[in-house]
Amino acid sequence: MRIAARSNLLVPEVREVMDIRQASDYLGISPDTLYKYASEGFVPAFKLDNRWRFKRSRLDEWMDRQSDLQAGEPAVDPHQKKPVKSAM
Image 1 (cartoon, rainbow, N blue to C red):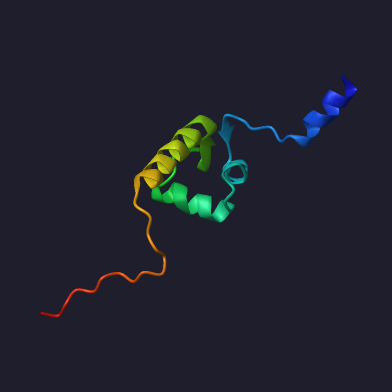
Image 2: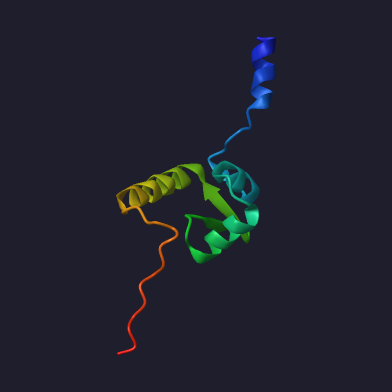
C-alpha cells in the first residue's frame, strides 16, 4: 500500500477542468501558444473569472476531430512550392 501511494505521486493529476498551464502540459504545447489558440477560438475553451479554462473531455474530442481531419488529407510535400498564377 505504501509503494502504491508513492507511485501515485509520480503521476500528475489530470483534472476535468484545467487552467492554461495544466492544459498546455496535457497537450504538449507552450502556455503562450495555447493562450493564442484559445483567444482565436481554435481550441475549445471558456473563461471563468476572466481566466481561460479547458475541459479535458472537450480537448480529447477536439484532438480526435483534428486527427481525423488530418488523416483524410492527402500527403503534401513540404518542399513543393505553391503554384503561381500566370500574369495573363
